[in-house]
Image (cartoon, rainbow, N blue to C red; front, top):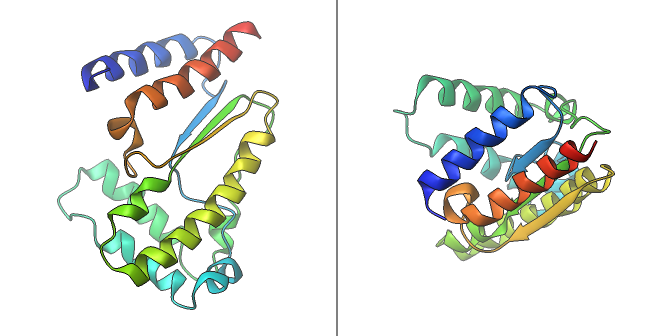
Length: 172
């Protein structure tokens, strides 16, 4: 499936879900782990939090305004002891599909940083599988194919997740 086809499926999904409810189901495509704690990161490496924060600073500065605003929001959530980050909770009781792109760590050339990021991905997997398991119609997928932009790198998988929650919503 090419990107144009994926875009049409996503647009059709948005149209299909809108009349039901604005939040009838959720698909998480490699989203930040909001259950992460400083203790989790220190358990992987004492520099884990610094590394996580520096990832945002490595992104291009010429991003669209909306994307920059979202990154600023994430920076604020990662500030301090992660209390603000941990206050962000996925809603319970609705169908959810969670995709984690574990392949992004394979793209890191430095072996020390790659090992730290693998440890952080392991924590993300443990936390986010609970998001899917807390949904009566949850789906949890980890892929090594592609990076953070899993919808571009692995569009069939992203579309399958969307179809999963739409089918669930349509049955209800």
